[in-house]
Length: 446
Image (cartoon, rainbow, N blue to C red; front, side, top):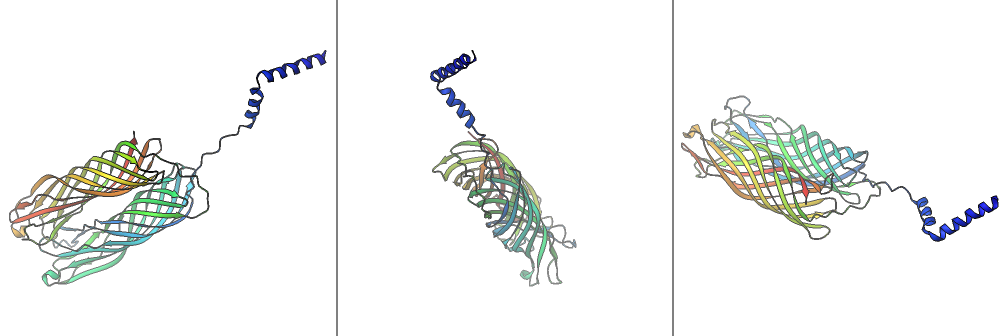
């Protein structure tokens, strides 16, 4: 009996395989299925070295600490080249986060001598080199783009000059290596292999200089705030032979919109257009911007992208600069809003877009002027006007967290030229306006 039952089961199994031949294959396939491979994670750990080039902006401030010349001040403006080398080490914490230490040393070429608006004293605060040693912490999400915060110590070599030679008096100067602090933000992205590119913003404050005084200068002066803002674009090489996944492709074509904002600085120079008074009142006030941005990109090739974009923003700068040795003479600059319409052209690495941009700009500015008591200057006068000019800059844009979202780090220089000529009593002044913007955007592609 048992032999007949076994024979029956064998016959049924044979018939089942004939009628449904896929069953045996499916069973074999199921046995062959393996767990999916782990998601590739970009490894940022290791020593790196590289170089950078960019722009330094002067925001230093001087006054008479003795009080002998009154409450006026000297504000230094202008921009110059920055370039140097970088050395650092990254340590990746899990797949998404990174900590590290970084040092850099380089040239900082700020040198803008100017004559003070009545009584024509000459001043300068020029720099030659800068070094920083900073920690940084950043987020990669396990991918090829790093967004980070950084901060630490800074050293700057500067020379301050109080020049009374216009009156046949002394030229007093002092050169120092001064230390202070720095902080900033940045974006770094892999270019392929072990190469990376970055865009970084730093604020630097290295404090006081010496008191510049002599029996034969018109008034003592001390630069009590040596402040600088730097925009750096760099390339680094990450040492090590770790194999990395291929750079993920990204389609940049299409419309986008989002928010954009950050810090802003004015480099405004006020002077007498009639030539009756020789000299400047500078204004280097700072503030913040916040607004909306929209545009459209065309992906010309896998690596080349062109686009157009515009933004309109609140621009919150409101600062008065009181003339050294000639209080209450002053120049005030207040801004309400700005807008730009720009083209941009970029190189896509896949995960990031490195770009330059340029076009038109408009800023609503209110200039105010208090005349020189020494020239019989009258009361405070002001003028509000929307000034038009040009904007250009560059940055890095990269995908951010969710599909369709990107973030960018951007520097923009805006020149909107002269405001109205302000006249009060026997004095005239007209302001020439430059602005430096350091911005971050969060954008959604449609």
